[in-house]
Length: 381
Image (cartoon, rainbow, N blue to C red; front, side, top):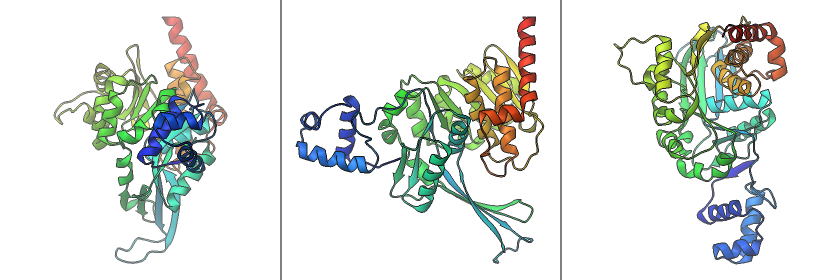
């Protein structure tokens, strides 16, 4: 289900319904100073557009994860032969769903977590593709917003016959339109969330607005890239989990190039900024987990790697899902790394085989080994 950009009257009506979901049309009319007939017309149109679901209308589901971020269509062209510049090259063109926030949401949904996403898509075929794909993957698409003035976020890549990137164009300006004003209209969903996930593709203004809100749900963030990570600075004291790599951590801490800090020191510096748990990605070496009680590094399980696209997004989703399933950080991180390994074994950004059952069976010995180590550590204590 998709919501649309609303005019002022429609927003006021939605706010009145949120305040009193069982109000009659006459009561809504009196509240807004309008005729009952006008209210009936607005409700009819909003119902057809999916913004209202019926009597008791838009009360949000509880115990769900809400992801706020970008949703892209990835177009990838791969030449059959050696690439020739300035010429038409025979090859293959593939379309897939992507975007850091969208990837995290799909992984969460496939693992069995109740997941909603707040994002923007355009009034175009690619927007419809993303909505349909997300719905099929199990994501609640009620809060996908169709924006009329911008095209759906699209990443166009051209690779040579060896799969190496030759060049790319990223048209992602639509994500800048996910403003505090639009998010404020989704406050009921945010207030009902059990966990809120954000990513640094969002605008600095939107992330700063989120930092100012009194939300009851824990906040989790993905730094995305060293360039974009700095936008998360206002959120640091509120983050229950932050996933970064070394370059992103250094950028977020605003460290001069001459300042040398080891990986554990970087994690500690982020904890000192108020972050509760740091997942510091070490690439092929695995992940450094850090909170105020413990630090440890967990290696990636052996796998048959096909592509590294989306592995970090699966890591984040796997960790958040594992927090609800396992008590020890060691098991949580091992399950997260197993999810990342599953994605490494797929050609696309999300492995469609990914389920909790598949991950635990595919990497059973790896996850059980971490449980044994955790139990041994507790015995020693």
